[in-house]
Length: 70
Image (cartoon, rainbow, N blue to C red):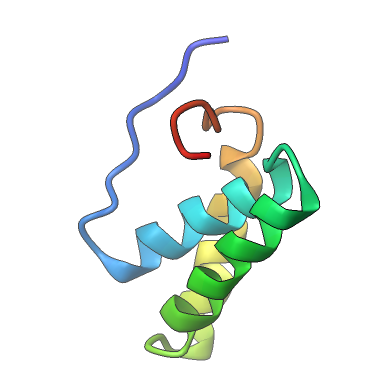
């Protein structure tokens, strides 16, 4: 499967990637680590931005490689 580069220069995009990584992390420990970042990022966004990030994350699952992140 072709992996698309992901723009993480804004918080909403970073949250989307973090959510996708949390779901696909190779272990519960890795997932929990990423969820710490998710909480930090989400704390700076509006509810609307968080919902958009969730929707984006759903599309990224399976397209974002966890290789090199953990």
